[in-house]
Image (cartoon, rainbow, N blue to C red):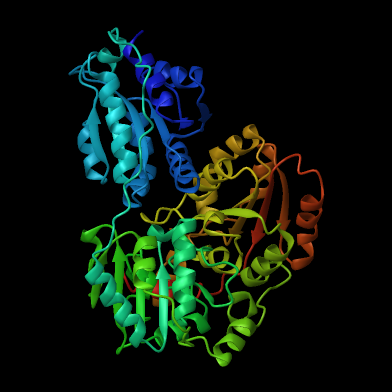
Length: 546
């Protein structure tokens, strides 16, 4: 058995069930070996799309996931998606063939590339050690929640693996939950006891059923309101005291209530400038506590009054102390009434700015929220439009929203939705893109159709890079470099085998209703010609950090 086959079979034996990639000569045998051993392989049309599909699948499923790449350009094509995964601490194993011959056209510094974007670099160095080194790389990805690039030198792949594949390969385990220091947990309990208006902000580290239940119980005891960072959106779905997302996407009421808190606790949340509106959502007299199992996370983005190193669920249960009388805290009748009336963005009154030629994105988003089934998984791209789907489209839980925005790259949204869709085949996949990102990632429309995904792709089409238009336009700058002639994206989609509809007015959405009610035999693209007179509400806040 050659090394390429042994490595592929060993990884599947260790629990890898899903592989994404684009196959070339260098990763042909290792990919086929994984397929032969029982893994599912999804061929993307571009390595960048494959990388983001793998990232989204790993985030949504929590399962060991592999990205398989050709040497040299296969890796460089995937680097943006790998960077996003690395910045997001996605447990992902990247298998990249490696050309080591000095004069090979494919030779680049693959180890240096991995380290440059924040991934962990590893290499198979010999036939004797190949299987152990591959399993160690997978184990590190899972145990440390890291994106690991494993280089597979071409010459080593061709050698015979002397030991073949061991029969007793163990599935790698995630990190052990960190037990909080009892004294620190007690200090957090003291802060909660003293707070009159506490707010919990849960992030990526709280995205487990156990953490959710523990936080709900603790919040009920202390009368805390519940918010999330964007990546944990949906975690508190169903709670009458949920503020939805904290930060730039927060509704006016949510922003006011968070600013009025006298205690803000970040649970597995970095409290970045995005989540706190560059600190503006933290009131001047508020105390701030942060709970994280990574001690390097504390104070990275803002000072905190109390840092507790520990697993979110275990810390929340420790801080709960003995059961006692529940406190009203921030959960007053007035707050309850306000949340019921205008807690969601879609409940905030607005003046529709639509014309016969262009639909208001708020009207579009509210209508789609009503039309599309509630059991959905949403992937969004980056751009001026992104606040509308991120705040106006409801999601069933934290696994209904996949937010690949740590690197702020446009063009990842469609691949994000594909990866999330494969992880949650029980839900309707919805990709929401801008026209710029849609055209960047258009090759993966073929992947959607080929996989038979009943996906809805919604394109907010304003014929330009809206973020730049609205950032530089008010200063009188020429915008010819960021605006384009109108593109018929519906026709493009039909060429890929989609059903498609152009939406200019609310009445045009009847075609979307018909698709939802029908057989959904082909995916649907909605080319929404949206108004473009001014930027989204969150854009000004976003650009303050640039």
